[in-house]
Image (cartoon, rainbow, N blue to C red; front, top):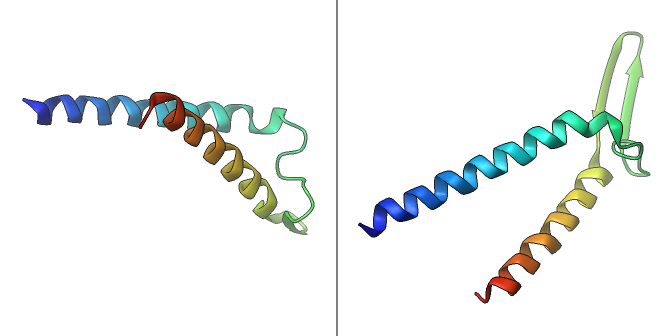
Length: 77
């Protein structure tokens, strides 16, 4: 029986992660500094452009790491 409960938790967490990613993609252009930080690489030639948001992803990773660690710390694990 414990296996089904664990599967249910995994499905809920996966759904929440997908929903958060959807919200991030939805509002990505509304946040003025995302993709425009120093350290983000941007190539533009004619109608062709490539963006490597290195610094933006490092900032997002840092924020998510802090949030996840706080959740784990407050949950007592």
